[in-house]
Amino acid sequence: MLHRITALHFDGQGHEHAHEHACHHEHTHADTPELSGEQTLALMSYMLEHNRSHAEELHNIAHALEKQGKHEAANLVGDAVHYFGHCNDKLDEALRLVKEGD
Image (tube, rainbow, N blue to C red):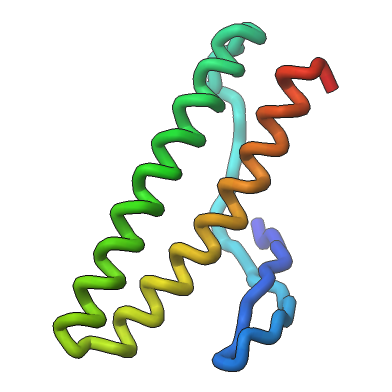
């Protein structure tokens, strides 16, 4: 089955643009175990901190690449860190809503 997702990207000048990607894999939840509210909150909290840790590691890698003269690679990793930050902001907001009970 073909699914379409809209992705937001930034060009070399920092301008945003969105476009659709076709995704050719099936995504089902048939074998996903039910999570309690407490388990959901704990997992979301863990995942957010885990992602923040990875973002920090990637930030350090970008600096290392820059020092090694690998500027294009450093810029791409920097972009990834930027997008990671946006994802983490969304997760943080979702976590806040869960804690408040929507």
